[in-house]
Length: 97
Image (cartoon, rainbow, N blue to C red; front, side, top):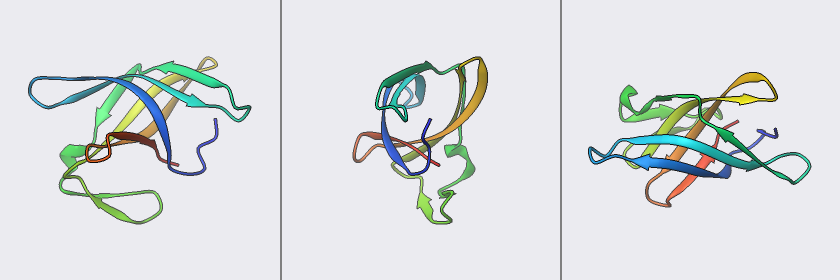
């Protein structure tokens, strides 16, 4: 999988009545241009860390409207952790490098 830059990905998720979000399945393009789907095996909601979140490129975002997650998927028999961000203003999911 190509994870060199923040890029939009397709996500199926559940929005609960209390406002929390549960990521269920991710779909993204692989290096060959084909879509790959992965079920989220486990996730961690990182928005509890406060109102400021450090991105991998050393910039900071305020989490009001940005919801960071760490998600575990199984990719070709290996467990892999992905860092994803949901932007509630743009209604987009991004994969972080």
